[in-house]
Length: 562
Image (cartoon, rainbow, N blue to C red; front, side, top):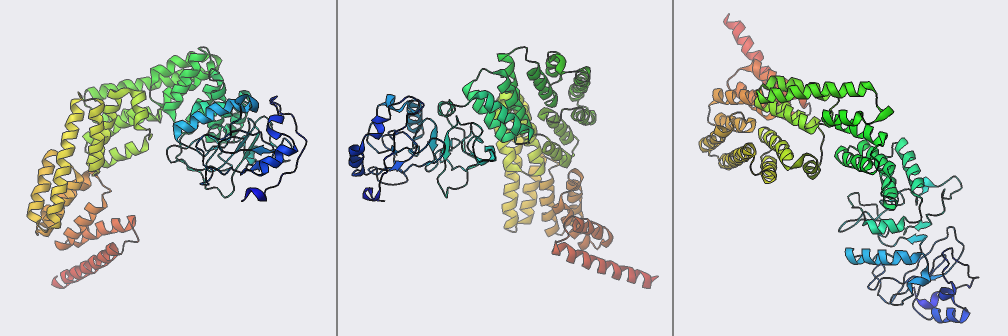
């Protein structure tokens, strides 16, 4: 668009609420004519604010300006934003507060996509307003304007007449045809968010967050609580409510720290004590739960304390069983502990998985860990400490190795040893994982080269380090089947299925070996189980049909002989 094609209709200047001098921006009709000769863009409703030094609008040359428009709330005004022109900060009123924040944010992030309009109107250009971006940054939508202000600038907050319930937010205008938001974007810097939130009432933000929480919109409620905290970080109720939203989102470890902060601000805050007690109960920390229940005042009752005490009794039994290496009792007591309320106690699930590994019940061990919470590793390190998290990672590495996830086992074991270099058991698991992974890789290469005898020996070497590894047993069975040693192959498959009853590859291999041995009845039994698990598998269906036909022939011959 050429500058000559732009026209301006003069209007009566209106005084801004900030008290800034409009004449410094609007000027008279002669100054308007002079401005029209320059390469500028005009937008209603916004005071004129200088762009950042190296700002490039939408890929246009730096000499061109950007058009900014809004039609909400403050009448028709004209704004000029042109690169290179400097306006005194005091001339822009409240928006001068945003100047330094946004300028610093752009310099730190290397971004030039922010266009400042006024203290009460923020225009979106490119990915402006997506304060959650990190690195590459994503765009935003009307449902996700900013991380800290998700609903104050979208239609869901509007009243039936289309107006926002509060006018202090101002207007947020979004560039049309903008891409969908990047879900993985990161929060913005606190200074910028505080600047954008300075005109919002934190109590109003909390009320909005409470409404979202009641409606099940936990992520939006969390963002509103974040906005309230950015304005008033020393309000205990905001921290406590944020903890509730984090808990609803499954982020229990973060919720614990938020509750602790609320109690630090207000030590006798009963609701925060109750929430923290409930979190400790779910995380399997009975003593801490009892402590905070007793400080919850009327918020807690005797039943809560009784539940925590019962949980503590189960935890004591778990500790005793592990010390005596009584794995069956440990499995039983960990299950009782989880049923008593510790449904998110990662250390309890790890204890159960460890006991099941010791009992050679590998499939159940894997299922136990899958049922447990999926907390971030760094969050676990912060919560449990390096040594505590190293023990958890060691158990996970053992389960990964038993199931055949050798690369995951190596990575997890290495991380455990980095967290706790003096952990002998973790170092032993790492050494075993390396040996087993190397044996499996070597055996696979030899098998693919049709060197079945050498491959069989390679898998046997790995089994010396982990005699019950189902993957190595199944692979060795394949080698033995190729070598005509079907009886030994069946033995390996039996051993693999003993620790992993659902290991389909081992069952299929055993069925094939039974067929080669003309043991049709047991072969059919395995094929039928496989067909039930995967009805669409044509190979299994054909093998099952053939086995049934062979069994019929065999029975017919036996009848004729009799």
